[in-house]
Length: 80
Image (cartoon, rainbow, N blue to C red):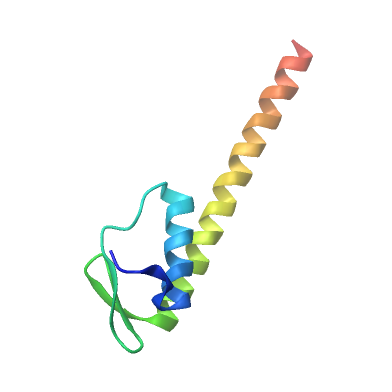
């Protein structure tokens, strides 16, 4: 694993990935200027930004689902 502070896009992706999956990506390193290797796939840093945004959205959705479930459980306990 490389130093995540090499490029801001890499640091953002790493933080988003860890937040969603509670682990680090298997492979994440900068190949050249503008190109990154992520789990065996070579992508541009601009695409990595889009991928980070998608991971952040998935994380927000998972948190919302958990809150909804907890709210329904609390409501059920209050009625019983």
